[in-house]
Length: 531
Image 1 (spheres, rainbow, N blue to C red):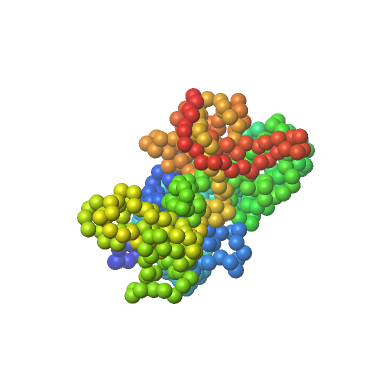
Image 2 (image 1 turned 90 degrees about the vertical axis):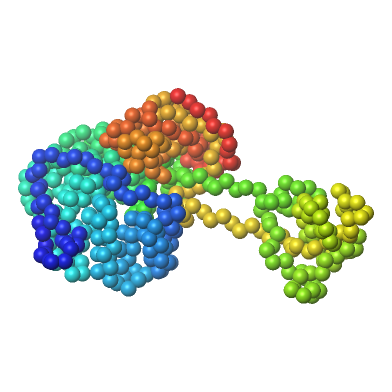
């Protein structure tokens, strides 16, 4: 397929592609994370800031697309492909920037040249919608989607996989190539696609009658952020469908419905710790007080809180003590107009009375040698109230070293609050502190301690880029096995996964039952390993 002849270099939008073949006989699963350009921490922080100011949990009028456009442009300049795709979306819709379909196409093509599968998938959508100068053409669109799916785009795999599940051909609605459709869905599912999980679970339930497996996959789909999976399971438990072994469970149905509604409002949500609030039968449900926010927050991913170091001076005693969380103001302004040239407070001799309350620093009137300079550097600010006499502080000095002067250095101000994790600001994660001592366990062992566990494999292992995500977490109870990556169609040995305990186990409550618990912990240091 080639859309246009031109003497100029062919733009990616006019790439010659193989025609869409709905009856192909083979499909090789590839993951987009393996081919996407790497993201730097700095660029990703910018990207997340843009996500936070445009989050779905904000009212539409509170979303700052202009700020996001500027931030994502900076991140894109640093090679962040997700930010560049989002920026293209803003130009396409005219959000925060002037509507410019040509700019959206240009940004998308820049990523196509870099081999980003999602960009090829987007180009298919542009052709299907006839964006800007592109002529609407479904044939061309499907060719791009096929190319994207072959490159590893989970979105294209989910879309085409569902289209191929028919028992016969009825284009353009569907085609009958179920074996390949299932392979595409399994590949998207392995990458964490909520849509692929829903379509895969749906066909296993309705067509194959493999209800036990379908239930597990749809449950994982909720973790991946699939609203349709949550609502489907809610309906199944409410009506006692065959999927759930004809079991009517209104309590489970209600919880799935709450999470489905949350995902409708905020598609960026993920619920990796779903089993903390909604484990599959036969596990008992923990008691829940009915507060929707509690249910949603408990199922979210956890991000470690930054370690807050003590502020300078908090370890000192006496007059030199500065309460933790406070710092000396950068611009000491006294409550008195008594300045010398340059706007400085006039220093005071030792033993005189402090003119006003604040912190004062002793220094020699005249530092004549290295010994004097070292003495000056060793001094720290000390607090004196108005009218108190400055103490004679001559430790390490002789009478011949000259007089000591007290210099006003200001009053206390609260330290600026540390910025929260952008994902917390976006509303898709909540903060916790790592428990001390740190406890790790290999995935081949049984869980030694109930709570949320964070999984990770070595970066040089196959599929590490797919597996090592910020939300790769699971709520596991003591004595249970850890999640097996192979059940997610990931060729990763359970023994290669290292799980880090983040606590947050449910606790007994006033009801006398184990209740859904939101907890936070102190900072940690040591490490305990198992397995």
